[in-house]
Image (tube, rainbow, N blue to C red; front, side, top):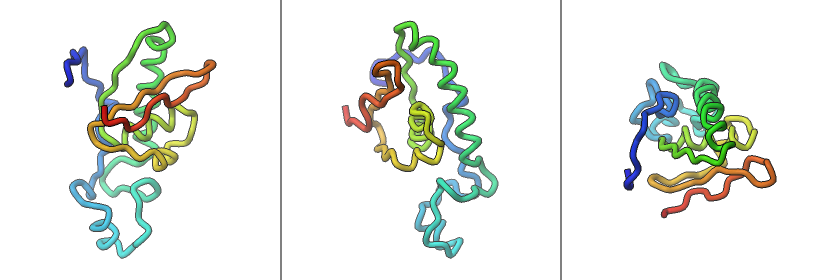
Length: 128
């Protein structure tokens, strides 16, 4: 990917298991449920992972990469949108559902880091 050497794959960064909703769009799910307010962020996913399950996974990833980052290293994480949005929210110490406020386009770059020992988003959703 873009000249990066993949040292390993991390199962905890796999995309959210959408269960029965896999391959369906939000409008299709809303129509099937007759619920115009349905959003993945605050409704159960039949046959799939719940938001809290994904949050547990990304929390493990953050815990794993922090020692590398704390010693001046870099960790490059590649994942799908919802997982990265949840990871960024958790990086900031927010609840997993706060990932809903972090719109993220495909194939963009985001950089999480520190400012005065606080977790921050340095770059978000950059096309390059």
